[in-house]
Length: 138
Image 1 (cartoon, helix red, strand yellow):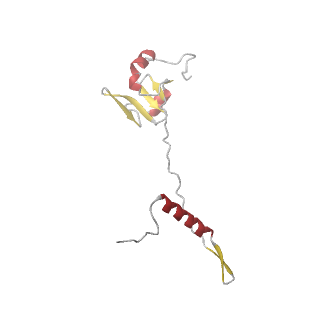
Image 2 (tube, helix red, strand yellow):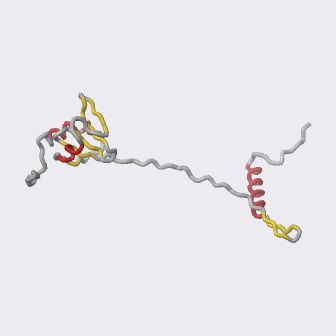
């Protein structure tokens, strides 16, 4: 018959006893041969690693003359290439400087331009210009 008892059990009582013992050791101050002795046990605390995802809302500027959308949140251009929508860091067929100098309109949608393009083409045809005085250079 084996009647050995384990000093430290993995039960709640064993855990509590271990914690109390650890606290007692970290706070122990005694007098040994007339000298003060203090035992300090370092306690390591892990930082919280909870990460909150950042959600960035897409914002678009549309350039009707070229049928190109610029996503200012992602710094990418969206347009149709051979019938498929693509997103690229630079527009195809026109320089970014020429594109930025052309008439543009800020969009009020925040999802894919493909979902709104048919409406945008009707509302802002290729020859669209903002209302008001002409912006031509003299």
